[in-house]
Image (cartoon, rainbow over all chains, first blue to last red; front, side, top):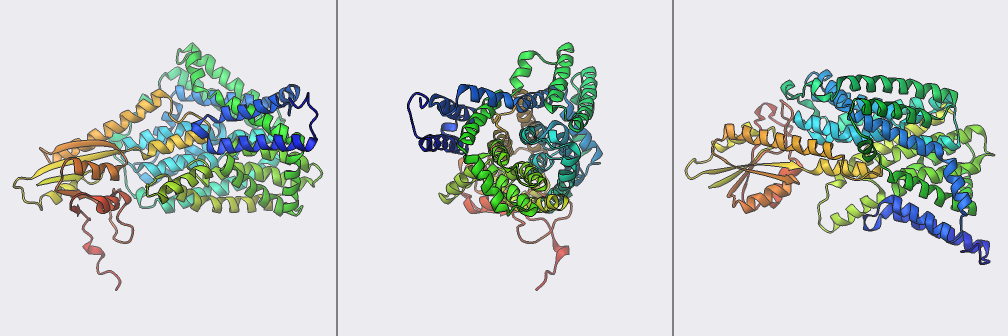
Length: 435
Length: 160
């Protein structure tokens, strides 16, 4: 519309910012329980309609993010097809067998399993697939359920920066600001191990009472029951080992990780179809297609805000706030990303921060690296602060409680409030020391 | 006298022992077990946070419900082995609320409950030993509540 009418630049900036903020508020509050993808696509559509971003620019933005889109597709495909093989159930039963009937040892094994799955198949696989599997297992074993569920949901995020593929957020950020594998590991491996240790330690302290019991071995489901088709299971196992190795090699060679993920998922799909363990329709149903609309919408909205120079100003403001030093970069990057993820969730925050980081090219490399690592770290761990979803949800729960309605969600929030700030601080300081 | 016994999967023995303290004349026992739906909501929150539909895939959801029902059935049957002839009530939702509502509907004269599910062999006295379910029931029950604490004489005397 504004392409045909002459409108001052300031007005365009204000309208674009207004639409952007409206979209982010929509994602925060989700009016009428609308899907985030509809809200993000709606914002993008409005900007296109108003001529605040041209179709060519919108298209080029989406093309620029091909690695992110493909990675999401590959990651979801790998997890869904591994689940179809019964791999997660098998791993959970093995974790229980190695626990030798002790609840605390099973708890530790769940943490280790969550770490392994997050590292290779990303935090989504742990949070979305391992969590219900562990729920079923501990219900069968008659162990306290909540500590184990929290272990899964927390470790999904805590172990999500061991490798670049451990969290799609990493891919969003690294697609714009590539770090070689050694730099990634140098900056994030040790902080990751430290926060995992803190996570495990604090949880053992919090749930020490519940974890002192034992479970009866006869309640444990037979391992063979978890394997749906022996040949496909073995094939899945081998493909995933290959994918894990390929991820590391591709990261080192700066080969697009999305192609490894999609390639691995394709191999699993061939096997699953060959052994008749799934159909294309069934696999398609396990993929969350709306997430692509959400990322596409968010990318276009942020791109149009970027064109107004606002995200550049935000980036400069962050840089000023950091004082231009590495310590400030890590603290500001971590705090900014962590707070932002709780306000607008982690994918939108990663997209906003990625845009803002683009304005720091003139800063020293160590400061840039500090911001990049801190953004990945803050976006990954931040969501644990308000485990019920976002700050908006927590505020809503607090209002309900004030009205005399008892809300169990607040119990979850308490755990996040205790453990997350400790992990954020310890991890940020370690990143700073490693810069 | 109508007595509602709250089972949690770990307390059938102390509950059944407690019933022996009551006069057996005109005693009607009820066994209640509530499938806690809190973990389900937690899983839904986790899914929504990752931009997925709240309910897991149908097969997984079915498995979760099946295991919950199976476990509940097993706990109730275990209760019946100790307290044969008792009426059974199985509910799902938030345990504390379901218990007080069931007690009102069933017209219980007394609720027997343990302070919390005990997974340890060794019980410890001390603060916060009454869990949120028992505390809610004590606060909101429509009838007297018999709180069955484990024997802890060996931990006495406590510091004066």
